[in-house]
Structure formats: C-alpha cells, structure tokens
Length: 316
Length: 136
Image (cartoon, rainbow over all chains, first blue to last red; front, side, top):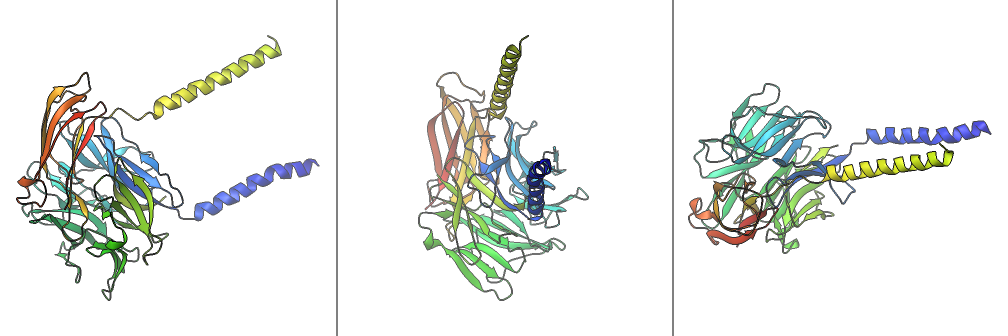
C-alpha cells in the first residue's frame, strides 16, 4: 500500500519532467514588435506567442527611457535594443542602440557616432548590426550603417548625406552577405519608396531586377530563395531564381486598410510572414500574419492607441 | 498562549503577508509617470498606398494659456521628427492650451495634402500626441 502511494506521488513528477524535457527541444518562435505610445516615453516591446492573443511586455518603459525597437535571433541570447531617451547635452530626445547580452541583463551602449538611430537588424550569425543613423550635428538624412559586435567598429554602408532621401528598414539576407533596405524620397505628390540591396563586403548598392518599381516593405524568406514585398499590387512573394511573382494578399482584398511601412518578417519555424496594416486614417494599427501561399491571413493584435512597428520573429 | 490564539495570530500574519505583497505588487507594477507632447508625421507612398512614418518633418509649438496646475516646465519647442516619425517633448507643460504645427513644406515643396498641420488644443494631464497625416 505504501509502495503504491509512493509511486502515486512520484509518477506526476516523472511525467512532468518528461513533458518539460519534450517541450524544451521544441523551438518556439515569438512575434516581437514595438508599440509606439501616445505620449513621450510610453513605448514598449511586446512579444506574442504563436497561439496567444494577448502579448506580453518584454521591455517596459521607464519615466525617462522607452523602447522603440528590438532585434536579435533569440530572446535568450544577445538583443540589440533601440532606446528612446533624453540627450543631456542637447535636452532633446533621440533613439540610441544598446546591447542586452542576456535576459534581464543590463543594457550596454553601443559605441556609435552621436546621432539618432533607427530600427536595427541583427545579422543571421548575430555578429553584426545594420541600422539607419543620422549623425549629429552635420547629418541631414538617415543612412545605413553597419556595426561589428566583435570589434566594436561602426562604418557607414551607403551613400552621402546630401541626397533628398532617407534609408530605413534594413533586413539581412540569410547568408549574411547582403542587406536589403528601402530608400524613401520626396516626390511631387507624396513619397516614393524603392528597394535596394547592399553587399556587406564590397558596399556595392544595386536594385533587384524586376523590382525597380515602388516597394514599401521587404524581407527575405528563411531559405534566402524568395522575398516578400509590399508593392502597388499588395503583398507579393518573389522567387529570386526565376523572378516569378505571386500576389498573396491583393490590396483590393483589404478594403479600408493600408500597409504601414514599419518592417516585415518571415518566420523560420511556422514560415509565416508578419506585417502591419492601418485603418487608412492612422487611428488603428493591426499586426497581421499570412502564409507564403496566401493562406490564412490573420490579424493577431489590434491597437487603437499605440502604433505597431518593426514586427520580428525571434526564437524564444 | 493557547493553540487557538496561536492559530489566530498565524492567520493574521499570513493575511498581513498577502496584504503587503499584494499591495507591494500593485505599487511596483504601476506604470511610471510619463507625459508631455509627442509630434507624429505619417505620409502616403504614391504608388503602393502604404503609410510611411516620415523623419525630418519640422515641428514647433508654444503654450498659449495654462488651464491649471500641471507637470512640465517647457512652454515652447522646435524640432523635427525622427526615423520612426515622431519627435518628443516630455517636459512640455501639461494641462495647458498649446498651438502646435508640423510643416511638410520645408522638405516637400508641393505635397498633395494640407501643408501645415496646425493644432490649437488642450494638452491634458498625462500628455498628448499630435499626428500630422498626409494622405490622399
């Protein structure tokens, strides 16, 4: 009798341990994004698990510091965080990049030229960071920079400071040899955004054959063979080898909604593509995902207060 | 001390612990004070129809009248939006009427929208966001 009771007590522990061990081998991918608040220092980083409808805050703003973007390959390893904070010398607020080496660890400032940084993008091997920067005081526009986490060196990757455009939304090719980004310029009626790529070794900039038209968002597939782009047609998947284009979410299929140009991501585990839509009046922002074949488009999270920005799939 | 009395004291102690940790939890999970003024600029891409946060849009503002006591000491500002399309003045005087505007024309001579986004509104306690949109 006593033996049976002891087994009864031990069995749940054994099964729980097995269950936990089984779960620990499963790669869980979170959709991490920023919520730009309705007032200063109200910006936070949130994470949404695949089957959850309510995100959790992973970086909570303070009274003089908030978090506007994050990038990394795993939440348990190094993350680069774009921190919104006050600059003592100017009294102004700027975004600066910091490194968080481990969960709960302190943020360490990256040794960059003074200025305002944009949304960072971590290389697939985690060793380099691409980001837009507008150096202070002489910079007039945001240009793409590259920071090497191993050496602590930063260098400007693209262009001069004079052209009437800005560069944004850097995203890495999975082999680490190339970064795609948008150049946005002022034209007569509005803005014009175009997709470019830059070699990380030679610095050579080029456009994609067949994609010279306006593109307002782009990211590579995890295998590097395709791109997801937001074009005048809507959301498209472009196979790079044969340049075949497939519209997976036509603009006409989302009446009353507009694409919000604040980054895209293509997940490795479930293979879904994440992007942000608005209600067309800038009053409501929605975080969406869709399968690369256009199946199961779904709004995962809706915000009527904050602006959803820089969605990124990150392994937990 | 009787056993009953000891149980009562133990129960009270546990209740106190719950109260302390419960209240402590409430206190420590309160969001920090934030406020002030945030200027936002969003414009439309002409071909894709996308809405784009716009950096480099000049903004300025000045307090016209206080409405009562409020946080913040700044009564005027001048700057421009950042890469994510916003510009902040966390020490802007709250509970006061402000005149603010964002001016596309400096970077964009002929936009197909209202060039000046002008607001004359009360910035309440807790702060405000002013969003200038150029959609068509």
